[in-house]
Length: 460
Ligand code: HEM
Image 1 (cartoon, rainbow, N blue to C red):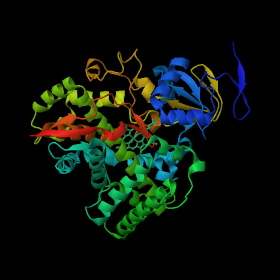
Image 2: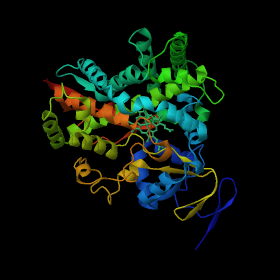
Image 3: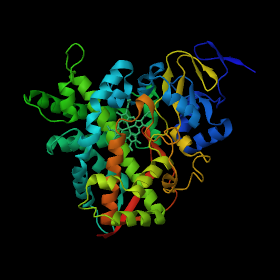
């Protein structure tokens, strides 16, 4: 039987899939403060395709069914916008960010930004990643606890600044690092993440108010980035292949270069998207590897089979069990619980439902990765499942898919594997958080509570 209801634009539409009917602000706060339980309860109740309503967003259809994910990721990308649905990150990355763009401009910027994250260019960063890891971890001392997320953030931030940005060590480099970390720390608790979702709270009530503090740090960071842009513009000969050099030499169809604000927004995007995600993924990997001792032993056996210190970085990244450990980490604790939303530009038939223009479809990566029919005993960390079978791009999608698939996927995996191999082959670590850690929101990503506390037992 076909039933009808009214959507927010008062159009009559074929009945949408069921979902929680609570007020949108309540659904939003619950999802922010208790994401895992909220998602699991909703899925149990409404299945793997349901509607949800979050504050400031149109109604969305949340999917975690591989067939639906395939239908979405393989549909003509022209049917959807995504940028407009990502407005929550605008205060961080600016309106000209790739994340907020749609259509031809999105495609054009994506092509421009891609090269430093792939192929030979990326592989050339291998030794720098190793050196940075050794420099940061040399600050650990035997018997002294440390927080994995802080060390991993220091590594991933240095990696992106030195490799992708081509920034030289010096005063500005140190300042950018410090101010960026402080700025992102504004959203380090689930409660503070609420500021990103409710624009009415984004008010500057002075340097001591949370939003005021954020704005001031952002201004400091902007000034540092603009200084770098000005300096590089003045260099007459620029043969570097880093992101800033690429963007500086880009011209639009009218032969115009990018403005300073456009450059700033794209640089912020790469900084924001490119380091905290990888740092959190590495913290989860260190947690899981030490939480399940058999995994650590098996991984060490594999790492000991080659001379990590002198091996070609590509050989390390091709180790099968190391790859399975990274995949299983991103399956069980994906960094983004959702893909970017896909906003329908016209009415669409989707999985048998007639969806109206303006409706959003989002893939719930977390729920898709916890399906017992695809991943038996989904709460168990078992890298072997990735050696026993291959999962399709609609069953395993930690980096999303379709035309918005993560630009830094290859780079993030390359970095994760090299850092993990380097640490495990140099240190015997003890996990101090021996309990099950449930992911908590940190800004728009999902991190281990407390950042994973570890201690060095022995250094090899
Ligand atoms: C483990 C680390 C990472 C994870 C789990 C991750 C995950 C994701 C996800 C889920 C999306 C949305 C995809 C979609 O909606 O289909 C995305 C987009 C994006 N990611 Fe990543 N990411 C990671 C690291 C990186 C790195 C290192 C960079 C490098 C700069 C990066 C840059 C981006 C950009 C620019 C987008 C937007 C793409 C677009 O709008 O076309 N990410 N990422």
